[in-house]
Image (cartoon, rainbow, N blue to C red; front, top):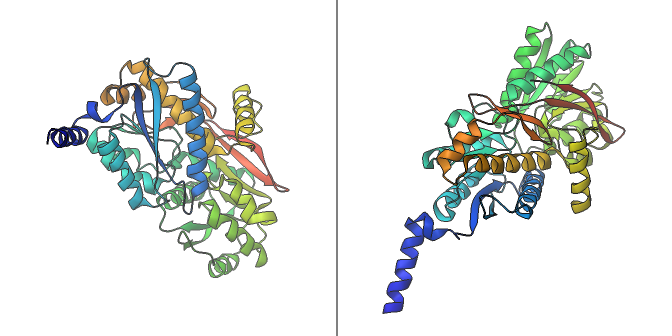
Amino acid sequence: MLKKIIETFFWVCVALSPSCSRNSSDILIGEYGSLTGGTATFGQSTHRGVTMATEEQNERGGLLGKKIKIITEDDQSKPEEAKTVVLKLLKQDRVIALLGEVASSRSLAAAPEAQKAKIPMLSPASTNPKVTEVGDYIFRSCFIDSFQGEAMAHFAKSLHLNRVAILKDIKNDYSVGLADYFERTFRALGGEITDIQSYSEGDIEFRAQLTALKGKNPEAIFIPGYYTEVGLIARQARELGLNVPLMGGDGWDSPKTLEIGGVSVNESYFSTHYAADDPDPKVKDFVDKYRKKHGSVPDAMAVLGYDAAALLFDAITRAGTTDPGKIRDALAATQNFSGVSGAISMDPSRNARKRLVILKIDNGNVHFYDAVKP
């Protein structure tokens, strides 16, 4: 009977008390991402970056005299699952902060729960402006789509392109927002949007939309989507004789773009967060460490995961406590944090001000082409 009473007390304590549910020797931080599903490379790469930053910090002694423990949950590339796993991290694991997600639609699904619980959430790569509008506990350590879309519109004009078509993922917050910013800026610069077509994530057939675009004789096509569809779109475009340059955003930044698209993505351009061939010593050091550990060159999501985790650890150090409210305040006060992807400063809307790079795919390789400062 006594044993039963003790067990009951223990589980009531776990459910109700943060101090009972945590190992006092660890600082618990939640991470959620797409380890499986349609954008699995995003979550996997981000997780590798978070893990590297955590291992390095723990080797330096952890934070506030304690070790960091990352509790990672797979949202399977589904917005509804993102909300479910974040609720688990908040209510069952009682983490003091959250890292995630990459995709804006999944960040938007989970962010209201973090805001309600008053637990700071730092997205490594969600670029849709709506994400941080959820509330004052929601942050991002990447640039936003208004900056990215405007930069790519200016870049298109710098290539002397005057007639551009758009093919966007109509069900994806990231794609719709990026397309909108590109369209508005390109028109304002005197460019013509010849046609706008749409598809949905998971589609594999795009010939009807591409045929319609081809009929309007664009000089380039802007495709603000994710790598799985982008690779297929590129192949089908070339099969239809649509041989104009293709352009996109950071949703292209995955080895799968080249793997799926093959030679069809040559002579294409996309904006992203870092370039592996950047001569900056900080970039070179990270690339070397990552290649030694994983046997491959890191993509942007690995870099952003690393930077987000490192920025969060820096905020906790500056806060001097694991109190979520104080960590929130420290994140908001971030200025000129030195990340692999560049210096990061938080603006009043909790969005990172940082540079953007434009990469070119040429002969099956991705190379640095240009950089744009905020």
